[in-house]
Length: 581
Image (cartoon, rainbow, N blue to C red; front, top):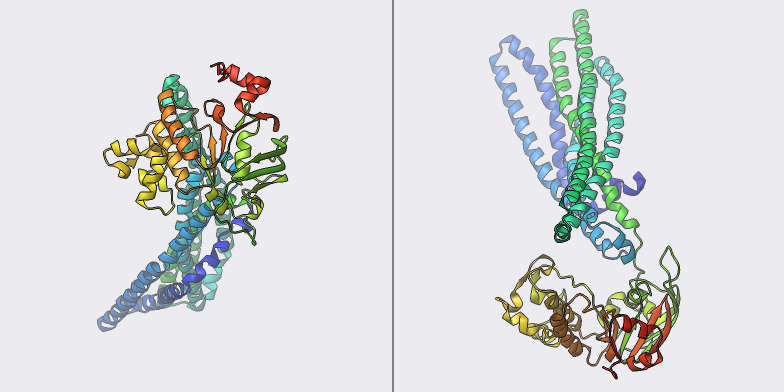
């Protein structure tokens, strides 16, 4: 849990510095707005006796003055609100931008443990709440506090004895507001956690609806959903109840103060220490105090809720990050794709080593397949090559360059991944192949041709401009996989990493993808992870991993003749030796 000093709004104050000029102009408008209240209080004190004296000329004069002061005040309020809104929104936007940028540098292992629904809620609803609170703090809370101070100062000047009676109740009001505010923040954090859990369940439910229907599990899902929304309702109800209780409690104290002032004023008038004009001004000031007190009370509750949101946003910063690029990083030119692993060992934060003293040489332009049972360390090997994780022992060299001496972005431009499950963002097919890189239409088409994707893309109604639906649901698995291959080869990488690239496809789709893969693999260093061993059989070398160690290596024919773990894997999948097939 973050401490207030770690998550307080004061950490956002440096972000306001670029907007200092706008803040000063808004602050000037704020001073004019607040400074008009003593004038209005004084006018009210003069107006009531004038009404009693039936001096119409004086009454009209005071009314005109009041209207002019009120008009200036409202214009200043407009300037204050409009000028101070943009800095608050800019700070919120920058905060959200920086947090999203931070999220992209969080270690993948830590990121996979976070709920996508929770992260989405934090970067949308929590960030919006922080923005609203920051805006209200600048354009509403600060003027309200200033208004309280100015009007109280005026009331002390008018009659310090009556004001003393009010100030005696002030500590009690402040204590009650603080007490309720602290409880509201705790209740809000609990409520936001429940909303995040609900968002996570919704994400899982929407993606898994076909599976739910296949297992006729709709009643189970409905019951679980209803439990989540009921817990969310209870958490929100707790927050609303606290806020609802605060208003009458504080209101009773305010009413006690008001009637105490009226009683003391009656005694003062009776004794001749106070006249009607003074009482009129004083009561006007008292009435003017009610609105800022209400604003400060409400805004303090919202501030506490925003504090809870800011704490949740700042928690993202505590997640472990990818290692930073070295300051003296090597600049990469055109690479051959020669890979070498020397004594590489790796273990996740909790658990036994996943890779143990791994020595491996993959000459440039060759195809190496990595096979083995689940948990052998195959995917971990790829994560080390892409520098998603860093080996605790040993080193990995690419064309003689230690990966730890390279910029991650430069390295990943040279290593292209074709994952088991293709992820695409909404947009056109051409944009999905470009994937944020600058490439001409001709280069996109060339990549699609290599991936055996050009034919089916041109058969679509809008060709390369066809819009992909969310998660690419308007394309088949084989088509998506060929787009993934095109995306991988577009940057002409030196090394191609194939992670179970055909495991989820039927025979016809696999044949089309295999053709694309063969074209994409030409002239590149290729590492293949596969449980289905169709591609593996043609590899230049096959490495068998088990419990993080290399237990065998060689060509398909050699390994089949030798027997052992590889032959056992093949026989279990009913794949025969090519010589006997």
